[in-house]
Length: 234
Image (cartoon, rainbow, N blue to C red; front, side, top):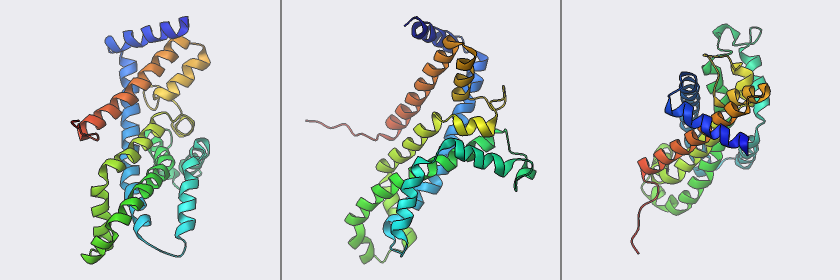
């Protein structure tokens, strides 16, 4: 209990004083996670919609694979990206290993199936309601995808938020591809792992409280900014 109390006090102190290390780590965490979420949403949302409205021979297999990829082991993804961008790897010439870019790539691979799978489920229900209307209007496949994405934007926001929540707490993959380098690739999750290993539980808990507050703040900002819930009068 004393560790939790002291950790909360340390978190408040660092936030109030705008501790430079905390600001740097938090900003990098936010930049990497939001970047990965944006890219995953640009890929996953249209992909989920396309699978929902199209019928093809291997459709069930694709859906099953997509759902299975939601449980990708992060450390395996990190290992794959590490090998891909290592000096002996096929993309080693790019020099992206141990950079925030490599961390974003790893997170995109992890959360894109989550975003696409949730989007597919949401669009599938909308497609059942709008199928006859869109067919009668002779809408092209891309126009159908656009219409369903727009009409289901509130439900699809949940898919992006699920991806963000998964990415903001990721540690295994980004530890491998980022290296947890101070002032370069150290984010909140890797800093927590480092400080816990060193026995600095006060600082680790402080970083943990900041991480939770950051995740909640982003979700609340999106919630109220997009008015995902409309007020009603009884």
